[in-house]
Amino acid sequence: WLVDPLDGTKEFAAGLDEWCACIALVEEGRATLGVLAGPGRLYAGLVGEGAWAEEAEGARRAIRSRVPPAEGLTVLASRSHHSETRHAEFVASY
Image 1: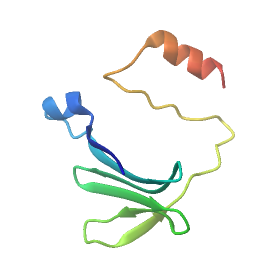
Image 2 (image 1 turned 120 degrees about the horizontal axis):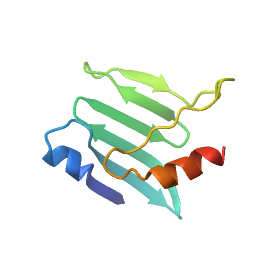
Image 3 (image 1 turned 45 degrees about the horizontal axis):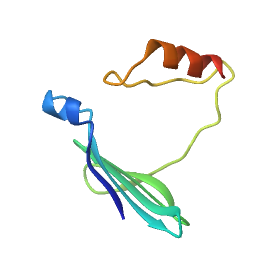
Image 4 (image 1 turned 60 degrees about the horizontal axis):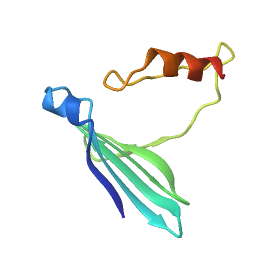
């Protein structure tokens, strides 16, 4: 098991809802189960079963990656670990 009990410590300490607990089952060097749980949301994925979001009432909603749009990718960056230089270099590489 690989566990990060509080990813987003600075955000949690600041009272923001931008944090989650990350849990993964790693078998033979490969993640086979993953769960991200944060305030009011839960996302999970299981090899062979796909990925889903858990709705408030407990129902599962399937999620999947999307085809990148013709106008380009969207880049999300951390407000706590942001570096203008690294960000610009990353974006330029695409």
